[in-house]
Amino acid sequence: MRKKAITVAAAAASILAWILGRQAPASAAVTAHSEMTAHGVGAARAAGPSSGGTTVTFTVNTGTLSIEVPAAADLGTVNVGATGAATPIGTVTVTDSRAGSGLNWTVTVTSDGLSLTTDSTQAIPASAITYASGDFTPTGTVTLSSAVTFPLSSSSQTVVTGNGIVGGNTATWNPSLTATMPPTAVLGSYTGTLTHSVA
Image (cartoon, rainbow, N blue to C red; front, side, top):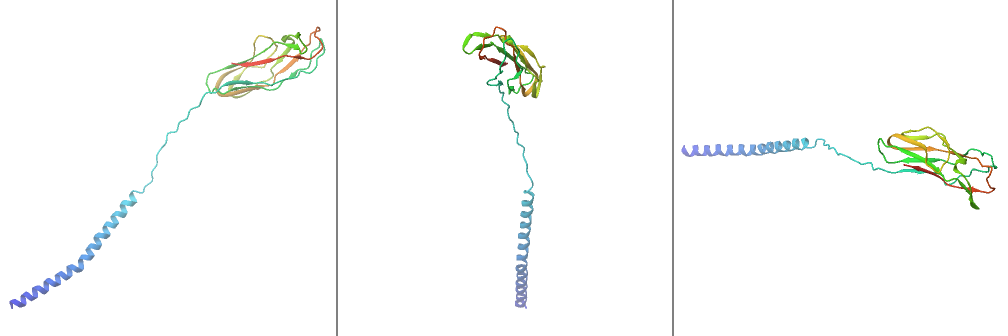
């Protein structure tokens, strides 16, 4: 009887061990599956959108104030004691690249008159030539003065002013010259220099 009881107990132990052995792989499989699921959720959360801002700066450098004038002009022919036709000499352009605010500029003109190419002692005074600016055309923010007409002189005379400037600007015009020959003028070709300046 004792031997049989021991045999039964051993058999029961064997059955229990077999049952536990069959369940262990399932438990391990559930554990592994749970870990894989947990890792998958963690990776999805880390893949969200991302952005960042960059501060961009730049500097505007100051430029120059300049004037461009025609290289030459031919007033044609004029009889002694007569007045010739008004002759456009070509476009004059002021370019202001200083990029400032509240600045201004002034254009002046001078002339020493005309002299005979074969005899410099024979001259026609600057006052015998009339300068007519015509209309001024601006670009940018600048207020220009009105058109002017005057006899030329060796002293500086104001042609145009630019005021109320904000940033870069330009002004263009095409002045005309009219020559009146004095009755004492000597026959021949005369030449001289007309000087525009801006400051």
